[in-house]
Image 1 (tube, rainbow, N blue to C red):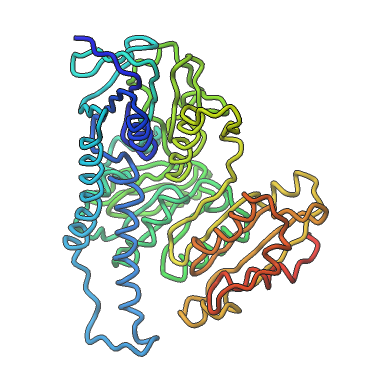
Image 2 (cartoon, one colour; image 1 turned 30 degrees about the vertical axis):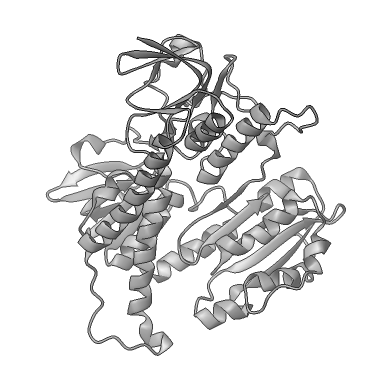
Length: 463
């Protein structure tokens, strides 16, 4: 059987459903295909469930430290991991179900559950049926990288996906990988009561970040009792009875960590290896990411790759922006419409430990390599009233600007509210306005954002 569509969307991650619904709303006959749970990584094994777990862990942390706020709790704080998991499952389950209902209730949109593979540049096969699409959009996302670590086949291990099935508290959780996923799971399980060791092969955790941000995050985690081992350049895994041993180097010193459970958080790989891309002639890079241009078009006319599978962003917000770029460029219908491009996007992200670091723009290393003459302002969170009042004074605010053009180059806010306050900076950067606009703003007291104008009023030459 062969069915003709104006557009075929493969995958229901962050960008696919929005694009399918918008195309259908414009009168196009659209099919969207999902082989697993509706919503992709973010809804099922990423943002939604993990941040729900983070909220439970934060509640446990506040309860344990209630005496600092004058709140007395009789007896030790107890964690019911089955109830923690049930809450997480309910939140994520509702999100997935609501998405499914939205898609299935959309006019002009056919929802198909199955595994799609390309037959040609214009056709995909799913459940024995051939779908022909004038336009095909690949939105298949990614999964946890499982590297060929020596000895890994001897032990059971977890990934961010299988962690979603955990309804018990590991005695000692070893996490290999010191970036977003590893650090978030590390802090939440430490707050649930587990012993936690984080292993990172690079000299610092969060390798892309400024050293002082990395050091600040490490200090926050260590104060909560999390062990952090960096410079683990030769990782090996082996079984020790009912324990898992992870050796950190091959120098003869045999640094080794023993734990009960192992979580791999060493990066992501795209779900592109079983799509039949070769049948369509679609090119990928050496890591399997689909190659796209600045408008997210592949090398094959009529085929786009959106979301994590294109390697142009690893966040939910960049995936959704992919949808906006493609939809606006296809549906604007206005000759005066400015073409939207991936290169217009400003790097921005947050790490959802507590307190969270928010980042936008260039790092210090990138600024120095650019040769720009820069000014920087910095303020510890211990001098931010909102942080003092909340009893969360770890971290700092740092803003760097171009001394000549007055544009904001980069900002890091590591501290309470950092994931929200950073948007004050991001919006001004998108407006291409000078930092003096923020410098003269009158922000609300008492907030973290209130101190942004103050920091911009205390700029000094960057060292």
